[in-house]
Image (cartoon, rainbow, N blue to C red; front, side):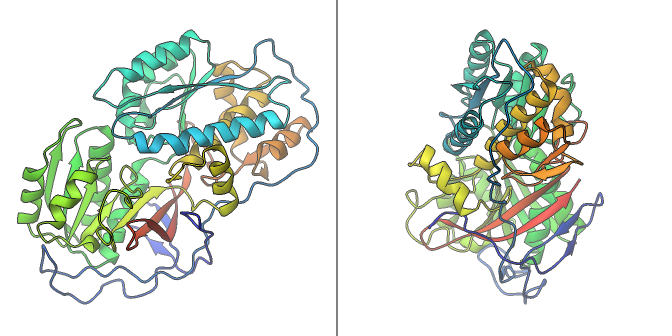
Length: 449
């Protein structure tokens, strides 16, 4: 059984308040305003999230395609990718599925004959987190090896430390997981792109979802960095626009190990729901909250911590908690391929986004007839929109070599880039924890920005 099984039929539509983001919500059955009841921390409203039905938001199976014609272009230097993804630090759990996604993408590109007649090369380096200087050192090493594009970092905070170093060298930076809105307006010379949508979208989905679960008040425990505060701002805006009130917002810094003060202050405000905007600090925060009577059903997690906790907590600890992260529910055939690359995978978070990053870079390179990061960047928007739909490198590159315009739709969703390098449409998945502290998909919401 895969972590994210195939989804079913989309049955409802939710109109979200603020900045005109329209969401197609799946399986939002049940009352949008549950009957009030007493909770562990608050008494204003009970938490009873809408009962899910079937959903239909799984990523498409990659089209098989036929024989791939030879490239009409040539290159003296093969396309060389670097990955800057976490194998240490607070986001280390995200590294394995992202690296597996990169490796799977490179394998499939090379199985189809590579880019411009040569196999794609890849070099992996650790990004660490913002407590260390690992990312800067790794970036220097990757640039020294002549990479044309760097896939990463996972953390928005880490990317902020290296984005100028990468783009200033004329190298393409392509993150599969950065969600900070700050990158939309960054002076990146057109060289920063991402497959993960801005937190404007995830924040609106989670803020509105907590309201549909009956929460009238919310407390937040927030990592004090670009990721945490940016996501918190958008969650708060959506929640309050829908009629709720944020009654506590406690910050902590990367590297902190004690969270009792933040937990006590949030619980003292007696919120109906608590949003945890953290990375793996959730492993320390959750026991503090449940030890003080907070129910799992009152906890709402985000992409930085919506993970498999089956080996971290006693059975039932997370049962009923909810979490969100960008992307469609991975289909079984794709997760099977990722497991063939890395049989030890427990999570698949951002695996699809990483895989798509490789395919989009490779296709843009083929379209550009060049492995230059600058030239690849000029073609990324074009291969993501307004052409003939295709969902794999072999089928897409075949169309390109036949002189056709393409529109790549990947494992993370339809992509479709803006001029700023952001996806303009995306899915946000909503998940619920089961008794074994693992995730099951509930529904997926599609939004345009």
